[in-house]
Length: 88
Image (tube, rainbow, N blue to C red; front, side, top):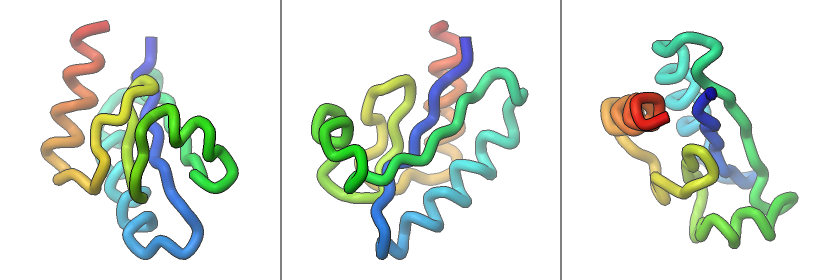
């Protein structure tokens, strides 16, 4: 089953655009069917963001778990997604 990659953002967040670009670049390295991508505005989905434990944006969740509360390096994100695919 595909890995759900969620970028949690907020309007007016300067780094959030950078996070989206980073994530899209990393997931492009995987097979299309392996990844499900979703952008979430924390203001619109505040309950979900609180449930995940998001304290600031951008944040990245994998399969509904907050893995990166801040912007990770490209290699760390790639490794974490790969790990999720292997453990499925």
